[in-house]
Length: 134
Image (spheres, rainbow, N blue to C red):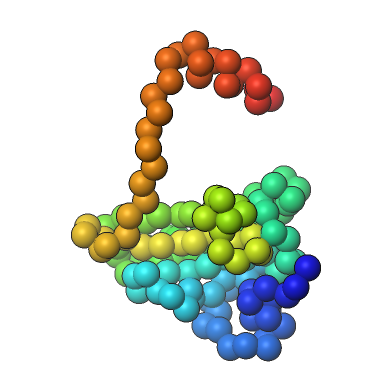
């Protein structure tokens, strides 16, 4: 796998505005700053998708995202907050390295997230659930 831009940030090959790091994750300002305070929380180890993490790694990633979200809320007082984690290009992932966007939101900020609702009947929802029931 080719090194991602995040791996290059972790190695300090390219500069970044880092807000937190530990042995498992790094959090830094998104260079694209959708809104001020937009932070990315990424695994230090380059793994493409969230499903490749074990449960403890996934929990730690989101625990740090939670800490970052609270810090962003305190610093910027946004009207809302979006946490977004995507996987593979069809799932909107643009960097093949697991990360969570912590995005402060404001009314009419131009950010849009839409998908077409299918509204299947309950019987179909139950059949879909049966395929993944834990």
